[in-house]
Each structure stands twice: as C-alpha cells, then as structure tokens.
Length: 68
Image: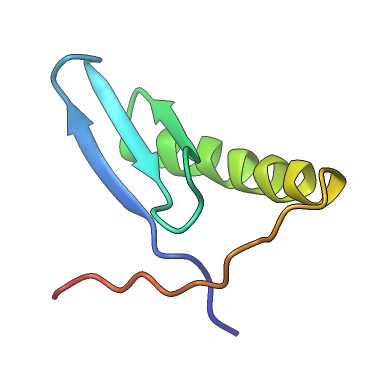
C-alpha cells in the first residue's frame, strides 16, 4: 500500500516546523519540532479525508514523488 508523500520543513516566519501533503490541497500542520508537526499532520490528513468523503469530493490517490 502506498501512502502520501509528506514534506516537513522549518519555517523561520512561524518559528516552527510545517508538515504538508502536496496531494491533499491545503492539508498541512504546525509543530514546535518535526515529530510534533508529523503527528499533527496525521490528524489533519484523517480529518481532511473524512471531510472530503462527507462532502462527496474526490480523494486524490498518492502520486507526488520527490525528485530525490
């Protein structure tokens, strides 16, 4: 089973870490450290998918792959 690619990076403007899933538009989360950002993103992903299903919207399949 494949899952969505997750990006985690430090945001100087926010003074913390941002985690996002490129395949799920606007699905991102913040954390004081990378682990917290990842944990919050897993919650956001679950809620994003639940909301999309409730609204009858298409849930994209994982397709984003980093260049490396």
